[in-house]
Length: 312
Image 1 (cartoon, helix red, strand yellow):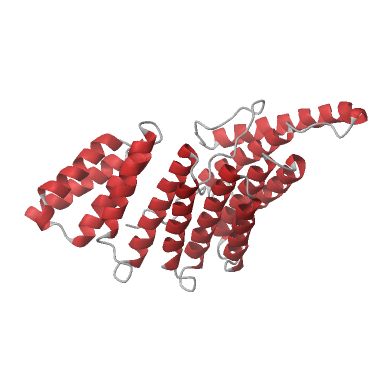
Image 2 (image 1 turned 60 degrees about the vertical axis):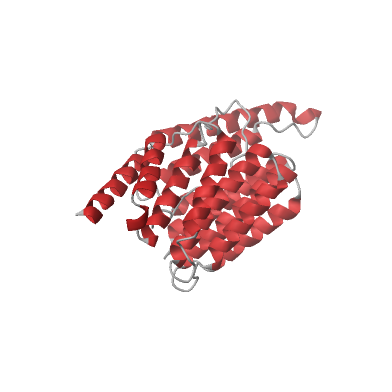
């Protein structure tokens, strides 16, 4: 009866987290950890601490960002005490991925090299327990997530060695996937390649890099069909809008090109608006959604999906 009650308490806290009631969920997770410490299994303690960390991580988007991110990392590290890699390799990898996300967010907020280095280290630890033979898609997503961290490092440092490493990880991710068997995985990696070109376009070769990004995004849409993957379809259209918006910020090649360039800008702006509209029609809702007339930003570096994160 007692164990059944504890399970019910945990399920209630999980429900609060799923419904985005983060502060209430945090209180419930802490209560269960404190009140039933002696009766909780190691798996329960690992789950509770990881979920507590996810609550802090989610809350950091809107409140006390640095403090909540540090609390998230502390909770995730407590979770790892109960998620040994030889006993729970998948859960161990998921928690390290969460630590990576928190350090990436700290890096973007504090603009410190250490945070990006720690994020990369965390993603590498997650990758170390990801089997490529039995779960090639999971391995590819982990590789692409690592590539995204290098993209974030580039946005902070402007050092192109980081994007070179990002592209290397993307290529290795694509190398283990068959398009017919894993259309979503391949599509998501292509999206990350496109996002990295957008990051490059912010600081160099704006036209060429934006066009490269569009090519990758459009190839991704061939795989991430609207009916089967509506949320990803929406998100990719948002990124397509960003790429066209980036093109509107380019300059004419020369004086004689001014009139034609103005027409190109008009077409790009129209396509950006169309892409943003598709994204919104398919349910994409994000405070970073920009109007096509505004400057787009590559600040966000996290993967477009949390695929497999819920396997706790």
